[in-house]
Length: 443
Image (cartoon, rainbow, N blue to C red; front, side, top):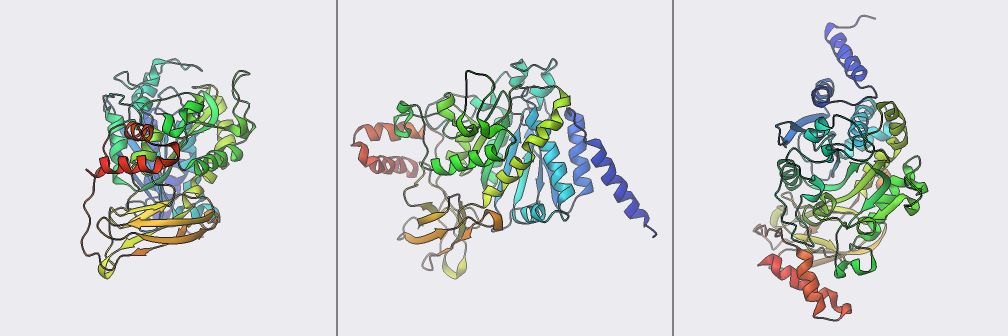
């Protein structure tokens, strides 16, 4: 059988990309070349772009995969993985490169991966702290200065905090991620770290309102976060065993509430949940922060299934559109499940879309357009992750002909206001405190 010259070139390109990714550490130029090679080989379902630059001017590359890689498509949720925000925690960086390789080579060959990419827009950032990685000249299992960015800042202490005024000087890498979160409709996320073996979930910080006095900082979506963390740990080769990295520390079922582990101000996962409307967990993938390269293949085998199964969870719960007169999308409408009113209300995007991660069960969904009567709908949510689509529930406000303005959620310690208000009422009246916070937000 004769093969056209163009086909030969394409085959050679695919072979060169596949051959380029072996189990070793890829420094900045190699990482960039690999991502560009992947995009060149698979342009129809990948999109490569930089969301910003590091202090030293290195690009913060993101590869997007999906049927519509260049733009958001109504009904298709956005997912992201971020690794290497601590420059000396390196396993996640390589795991995401191998995840990319697995996804692109499986698409249109493996039916599950094909359905996953057809129904999900997946964003992968292999390194958030390229300067820190390059600065780690001598790999170490425990600590190197490469943990920090070039300005000596810990990027996972650098985000606005919902509980305390951490007075962080926002770094270029942090600002790039904050802008990225603002510009996309992320629903689910995970950030990959090293130094332990556990899936940690929100909140990382806390106060009396979230139960920190009892050593556990609980969000209103605690059940969902526990499910997400267990999804990863139970699909990992050994994380679910909960043995930790030494005899002093164990994590039952391989998961932990972040605050229960240790208190952390300015963390990225809390920022995603409060200000980004995105559920994020932190994945600690290796006891050794920067292990020898000859261990990377085993790390990939240990994490491969968990990385895929976790992405599928973006299809939990319910999604839909809020529309007005003549079916016009209504942005900035509040859509939340009854009993789960977030301190920063979850709102529809510019297309009038909402996505709520909820476990299977019966819920009352409340859609509110400011100035109009709220609309309540009772929904029975099944487990649709295997179908790669959350339950669809739309809301129509035919009397609404104008788009409500977008109130900004202030970058202040919102739970401080909540705590002060709670102190003035009985514990059973926490809802009144939440209303106080809402007033602060809407002013």
